[in-house]
Image 1 (cartoon, rainbow, N blue to C red):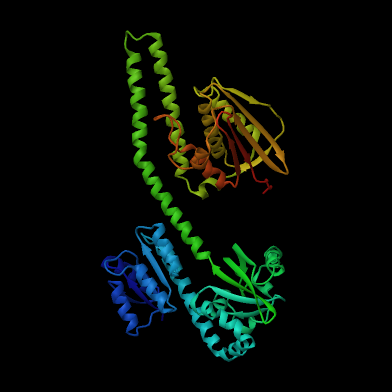
Image 2 (image 1 turned 135 degrees about the vertical axis):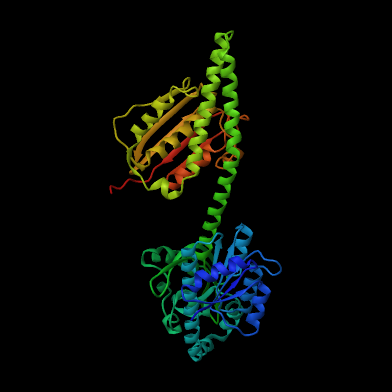
Length: 503
């Protein structure tokens, strides 16, 4: 029976986690501090898995994970926290925590992570046992090139990354223990002596082998290569992402190439979880500030309407009140649309997509906005075309995307400039180009344009959310966006839509 140690300085959380895991048949032991847990391990108690809070008085969960890593114990640690941040996530990755979970902990997620962590531990224990049985074989292989092994010994013994050495014929001649764990080989002979091609998937092999060949063509001791997000294949044909650093050197007249391989799969998952947490925190900030924005607009509307309603109000005052009301209403509409977009998940943005006609969708948006205060006096240049240009999107999302760009273009031209809209198809991709003759943007503005709450408009005239929302939409629908702008020469927004495949 797997024995799990739970560390948390809050009794209620310890009991809650114990209740969930006990029902699944796990044996549970509790510790109210990381120091107590360290004492249990140093006194010889054996555990299959540790679940630890990060923030605790005294020794933290990160410190405990560091202790396990320094002791080189095959004991996966799952860290839980109510305050996820980049610093703790980086520390968790550095000390090889198995998982990083935010509170409140979801029962299904917890059980899934626990199951996978135990499977990984059991597999490592099994592989290590088999590896120990093949020590004689490994020793014989090392004696073939003692100098090479001495050079690699420090790396092999100090890292949990896979370290694999090949010769000029692309044959694997050396691998550390972490290599067998990472690639799940049952025996050293299944890896050592094989062609390095067995580590790559069939569809990616040629790409990576071409890059490796560049290193092989260089003079030994002078060539290095860094590869990021490489798709590698385990012995069971499952794949994972890794970063690889390759160096070459010469020993006794022969050329060798050593690659250090780091599995970045868990790192990417943790980063995604952290980004999700940061996004939720950002939405909280939005919710706190929206009331202020709405009250400002409503105050302006109420004040001018009251003045225009007086018996002695002249036509000029009434016209002014009407313009203020229209402008503030448009601001509230844009703010509401952007906020609704921010609250949607990636799934909700893409799950109801359909094939739309780009030109028809543009016409629909222009029909709504061309009489608004911002676009009424702008010159919209657009060649009407009966050719249908298919794009796969959500109609509401496209309307929000285009309206944000058009309204920004109107602001850039003080609502009296020229806005040109061009659509065409090139290499099966739909293109949409929106150009204005406004004031243009500086390089500093272009670098910050997607940041939430960043705006160059006067106080009260912009929310700073429009381009942030545009970025979310183009990312969700895999649209390429190219922006070209210089001060005094206006701006150009070029959208390239992915090829449409009939479903």
